Amino acid sequence: MSELLNVVGHPLILHKLTIMRRKDTTTDNFRRLLREIAQLLAYEVTRDLPLELVPIETPLAAIDAPQISGKKLCLVSILRAGNGMLDGMLDILPAARVGHIGLYRDPATLAAVEYYFKVPEDIAERLVIVVDPMLATGHSAAAALTRLKAAGAATIKYVCLLAAPEGVAALHAAHPDVPVYTAAVDDHLNAHGYIVPGLGDAGDRLFGTK
Ligand code: URA
Image (tube, rainbow, N blue to C red; front, side, top):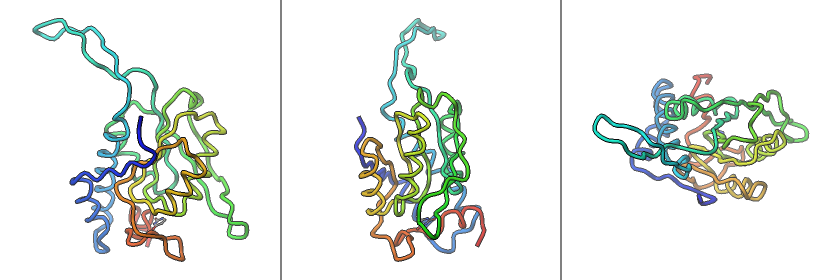
């Protein structure tokens, strides 16, 4: 059973994250590092997948060897920055299905409005791993999880690169059944909803849009 908050502070992850945080890190390096960290987070988020023994023959002997059993996987990217973590996750979990969810915040009501939603039909039978690098206010993350549950998702894990304490608290309050995996929990959110010290706007840095 995983903890509700899993801070994956492996030295490789923290070293790569430090390079990502630097304001002068180039777009191509930022993108490559996010992919590499997603690979390492995939290792941790799948740590408790159940195994079963299957009979196999090596060139030397017949043995019962472990293979993953039980739930199939579905990765869900919260657009657009979530896409920066997808390829790294898929490097490690190549058979996973993939869903996408797009939300924007209505400037008047501040409510999360859905503009795109596509997930596998059998999502109810899958372990759903939601990816989005920055867990900031937690509002869009909570809305995404609510929408995924409405579509049938029953077992969900949430993986990000960086979290704000406020975002972790908001997500846990709304979805106490969803464990969060992150490389680090930073100090606070600023008045504009950015994580401090953070790394800036992950989507812009990933896609070079600013
Ligand atoms: N989204 C980002 O990309 N960066 C933040 O600091 C907060 C939300």
